[in-house]
Image 1 (cartoon, rainbow, N blue to C red):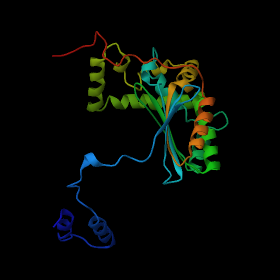
Image 2 (spheres, helix red, strand yellow; image 1 turned 45 degrees about the vertical axis):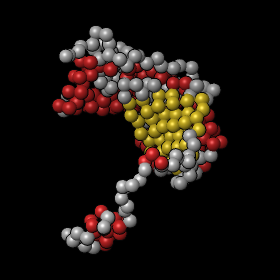
Image 3 (cartoon, rainbow, N blue to C red; image 1 turned 30 degrees about the horizontal axis):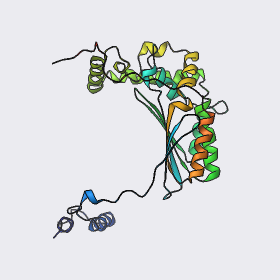
Image 4 (tube, rainbow, N blue to C red; image 1 turned 90 degrees about the vertical axis):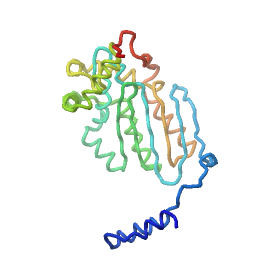
Length: 275
């Protein structure tokens, strides 16, 4: 008797429709024993890669199972570029989705929600990542991508919105100090990467956030969010022609002609070591 059958022979503690459905699902399970993992067939999907004239590096994987697509933009715009303003990269990234010059933050969020689109942002020391999930229906896709492109290329960066994001980042900084795990992580990074940008938390410092000006925000955006400073991943229900056009429309709207020179990720020569 196989494992699945022996499991089902055990008396059930409860019964009902949910239990019946679970039993039916389990009855279709097969043991993985005997499968030769070295003989698995390669995936039939071919990843298409190209570099745009603007310098953006693109990977596209068609997937037509569902009428949707996922877009991921990985800008080399992490906190290593903060310079003398720890927190600058995070403040720029998290201020992007506070609206465009035409829509305030509330209407921007309502537009995305009303069109079934989901956007997320994340940042680490090396990269700022912006993702978008959207239905691939042409008219809907065009509307969402138009607004998404406006946000990336010409963010509003209104003072009130930036101040609100600044306060949220400050709260996140204070919260890190409450948890032993994050305190230990921050102390380790500061110890190993002394005098290196990795030594400073991604959200920066309270002093750094307080000192960031509107001019510094806009200057950072114009540099770090340029077309040749991004890697683009695209997966979904699109033809190659649609994928190329989507990417072209996006990167042509972005700032141009700047690429980050990231520091060596190795610990600085004068970093502290222990034996």
